[in-house]
Length: 396
Image 1 (cartoon, helix red, strand yellow):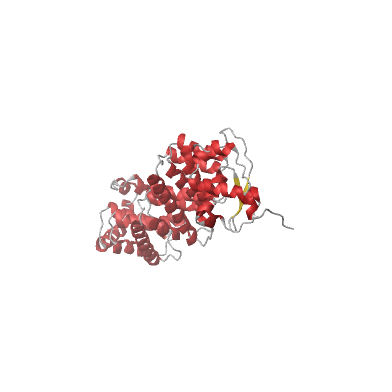
Image 2 (tube, one colour; image 1 turned 60 degrees about the horizontal axis):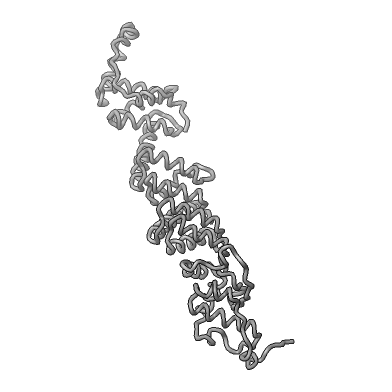
């Protein structure tokens, strides 16, 4: 059963308009919003058959009508129940501390926010936070729109006003109070978010990065000076970890930072040097008859003799050959190389002569007297620390 006034009867009726609407709301609304509200109120009051749609009746677009109802929903005078098709319920006036009206100077902002977050709308308690973002935190109205849009991108369309309030406070403390600075901040946020996402993709993790992960990424880029390419270049170094994560990566990047490797080029050069050290260490161990690979510390030890002490490669290899078959060949190599370094022996020929001289010397001349005449070293404390390690027992 459908009971209604005919359209002719509706024309002769009156539409009651609450004086609170006229006094409190009408002065702050634009013409389009007023026309849409009153025409809709007439339809509700008369119950007339809606032969003509509101857009056609008022000569407006559907978007204009929807925006108008979004505005009135922000004023808590209507409730949008559905967007397509547009279903709107008119509500009773509710008294509020603020007189039930958005301050006139924020009318455009509230309307813009309503369009931004529709069909959801901020109620008057939530709008008080919006006013605080302007009056307390110092954000301009355009920045407020950027703020809300950003928070919706981060947390979804149902983001809480309390969360937005915390972000607004942070923006204010960081001086983000204009649209230009807000967009620059958001661009930086997107960079670290996408950078952290790129790390996760390298690990085959199909999820969004957490705030803790994006905060770490921001630290690596902003504070430690890593380039995004350098961070990705460091990831293969975590392959020894069963489950690589941002905590392990943070420790790795911290060590690289201390070594001055914050760009991809620097990491690549260090990796190439490491590969070269591995290859030469393998050659040394082969000459000494050692089957197991050199440890990281042993490679550093060999590199010290090669680079810091400036001993020729062929001399180190010759020394390795002399230690073949020993119980602890690397320890013997260390002793032999150090002795040659102290004696300033730089060629295989000089090393061979020195060893032949030692073998021919009477045993009685060896011992305490010979030790007393041993020349003083000029090694640094760091070099001595390397030399005193029993490298044959060193582990990776």
